[in-house]
Image (cartoon, rainbow, N blue to C red; front, side, top):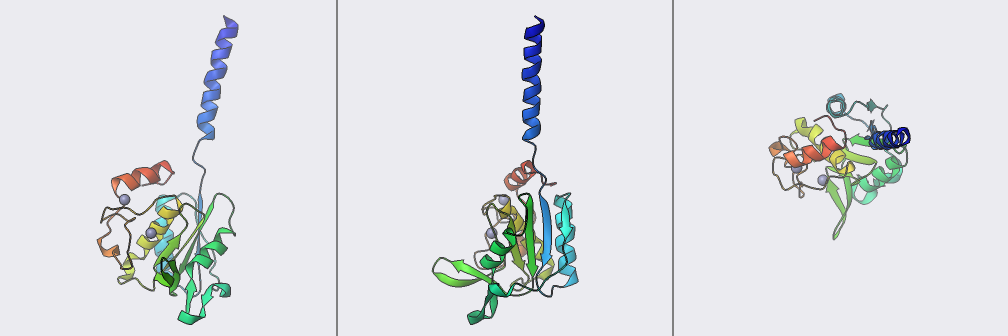
Amino acid sequence: MVIRLLAIFLILSSCHNNVDSRKIPDIHIKILPLGKVKESYIKEAYDNIQKISAHAELLPGIEIPAMAFYAPRNRYRADSLIRWMSRQGKANEIYVGITMQDISTTKGEYADYGVMGLGYCPGKACVVSSYRLKDKQHFYKLVIHELGHNMGLQHCPVSTCYMRDAKGGDPTGEEKAFCEKCTAYLQKKGWKL
Ligand SMILES: [Zn+2]
Ligand SMILES: [Zn+2]
């Protein structure tokens, strides 16, 4: 009987351990200003990331890596920037590059297509630019959107959701919050929403 109780206890405790090991890893989100960036954008990005994560860090700004420069359009390749940033961090780190420069990527038939942001889905890096944003007070929504991609969220059909597809425009004025479905997904990933 003692042996059986011990066996049950061991099973219970191993289950408990399993639950512990499945705990969400703490994702550290590092904000990296690229080139000259207005203080208000940096603050907005930092404040809003602090709301969703206990591990937000603001890094000292750097010049935009010259290898990302795309001379024919006088702008920077977002895909090169996120590739470079994703190599900087450890496994539990996400780099959020913020810039005021125009950024672009290859999209379908377009070899160089201007974007407001780009992030791996899922992955360890994203970059956002204020350049194409109509109303600059919505800057943080770009940051949150790309971070959502980093956590594995695809675009969302809800028109007021932060994860809505910009489709070449700027819908940030209509975006109010994450929809219920996106909120539930991110909460499971450890976001404070
Ligand atoms: Zn997107
Ligand atoms: Zn949504």
